[in-house]
Structures are given as structure tokens and as C-alpha cells.
Image 1: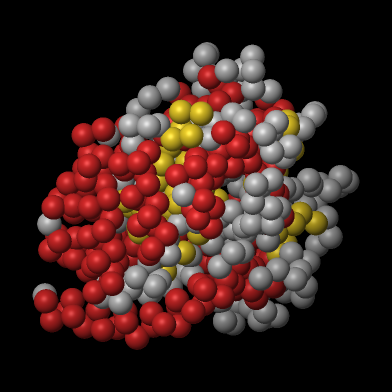
Image 2: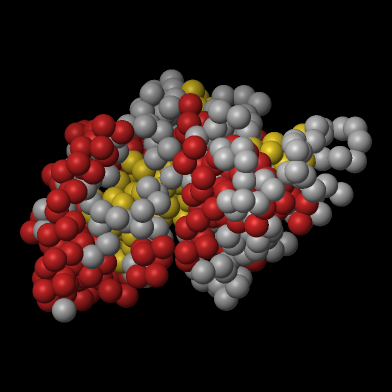
Length: 464
């Protein structure tokens, strides 16, 4: 066992430099990922999920543990992964350096670089939800980082911890952001020092929905949904805010700078944000329409690279919550209804992860379909990424259940033997199999509905 572990460690080290250089070269690029939670009893298996994620053009995923099946499923997918250390493991990691080393060896080195692990989220919202564990947080972070250093993985894999905005006692105006004094100097400042010296980033969970739900009389819904009718001015800085998301991020920056002005140079990544499609009676604003608007406008904002008023033109890596609705999550109804997809992988609403294009027709959705006759075909778009097209083809012919037998060598639709032609046939088979329902000709934005038959020679594309 130890010999095998050592072999894996040596294998991991061979690719560390190249992968680390690649990440350095792409640092600062705006990107949107997704949280893959699994508190449910009806989700697809991890391998199917990994294929599905790639088919949707999602390049970054955050998980809440280090489940081996999930880590293995994302191997060789080029999806970057932030893994989690659950709160219940903090004390052990803080008090036992050997346990921290073994955890990193088992959950990082054993899978890296085939699985592109980029970060470890140590606990989740510990300062807000687990007061008895607060004293163990920095110790656990230090020990995990030391283990990464010993394995020469610290350049590629960063250690941080996600914070809730509730660690702020003041967030308005943004320039007056301030941390809870109970933790500010004794806990938060040492954590920020750790992140600063190790070249890591600050993880913050940002939910404008909570602010609106808690105070709808004072927080305008349009302001929370990136649809302001007026700008909100910070009287201390004269900075103008067009969305609550930016104001919340800048409030956190201001709170950090109040501790040490150098902390403005730390990078914030938003490890959770989202909007529920369903909520209890008192959860105002929960709807498919609002969720589609929030996440669609958020993606547009993030991918524009505009940054925030305090940090203009500064990329904000952001992770949407969440990939799936999770039917076993405790709490109000909203907690079980943040998903972009139902467990059967149909869209709750359509969302493009690179353009923010969205539709909130309810249930599932797809690009606008052409008007006209009944003959409709789902074809691959021209000019899209070959990697995404291949992943979408793999999904259609695999978990999607499309009839891809005619694409085999010697069969009617093997020729023309091109990726576009094969993907088009598979996409159309999936589309027709699912009765051309909305949401079944999307494939991560790589497909489009057409009324002209692509059939050629003996290769006949089915339609209804």
C-alpha cells in the first residue's frame, strides 16, 4: 500500500510544474463554475455527472468533500476541482499533522494531476455556523498547507476556507464593511495573513437573495437581480453600484482593508451564489423567472471582466449554487431548489455558462425553435469547441440513451466520418427520443434546432 502511494506521489510530481505554469498563465481570467452537492437520494452516478458537466461546457466544479468516486470521475476531463474538508474533520486536522499529511496524500496526491484539483475548501462557513470549531480552523489550514508543501503540490493546490457574509456586522455602504469584532483580530486577520503569505485566495459565499428575503422593503428586487432602475451611490467614496452582488463583494473587501490595507491585493473568489426557484411562503422572490434572471445576469457580469466599483477590471471567479436540486437538504424549501438541473439532468431553466443567455419558460427550456412545418432536427452548431462537441456526443450516446448504432463503421451514418456529422446525428436522435421537448436540444449551447433535413444518401435522420 505504501509503495503504491509513493508511486502515485512520484507520478503526480512529474506534472506539477507544467500544470502550475498553465494555471499561472490563465490566472485572472473571469470564469463561472458550479457547486456539485450530493445531499439527495436520486442523483446520477458521479461518472455520468462528470460527463454531463463537460457536455454543458462547465470548466470548474466545487464539491463539499473528497469522495473518491467523484474525484476519479473527473479524471482526464480538464475540469478544475475545488474539494472540501467537512467541518467535522477540522479538529483532527488541526491537532494531528500526520492526519493532515495522510489526508492530502489520499485525497489530493493520489488523484492529481489526472484530476485537476486546484484548491481545498477547509470547512464551510465555520465562523457563522460552528463556533466550537473556530479555534481549529487556522490550525487545520496550516497543517494541510504544510502537507502540500512537503509533497511539492502547494504551487498548484491552494488552501482556503469559505466565509458567509454574516461575518460582517456592517455591509452598507460597501466602504463601511466591517467584521464581527469577536473574530476580527483573533481569527479573521490571522486567516487573511495565512492566505496572503501562501498566495491563496479568500472564499466568500455571496447571496443577494438572502438580503432581499430578509428586508424586501429596503432591498429592491431589481437591484438584487442585476436589473437596477437607478444606481446606488456609496456616500463615502462616490462609487456607483448597479447591483447588490458588487456591493456585497466590495463590503467584504472594505472589511479586509480595515484590518490591513494590503489585503486589498488578496483575490476574492465567490464560492457560492445563486437564487432558488421554489421557496416557502415567507421566502419572497423565489421563482424560476427570478433564478434565471439572477444567474443569467450574473454570468454576463462575471464574464465581462468588469470587476466591481472598488476593484474594476478585476476577474471574479464565481461558483453557482448548485448543479442539481438536492431533495434531502434540511431547512426551508429554497434549500432544496437552487439547482440548475433536475436529477434527470433536464434543465430547470436554460443557462449558458459563457454568455449568460437564459430562458425561464418553466420546467425545462431550450433555444428558440424555428417556426414553420413539423419537421425539426437538432444539429450541432458550427464553429464550437471540438472538446465540448465530443463531450456532448459522448453524453448523448452514453447516459443520454441516443441511438448511435448507425454511426458505427459500416453502418448507414458512419460517413461522413466527421465530429460535426456524428454529433448532429446523436443530438437529433436524443431530441426525437425525448419527443422534441424543450431543453432537449441544448447540449451546453452546442446544438441548434433546424427545419432542413440533413439526411443524405442512406443516412436518414428521424423526425416526428
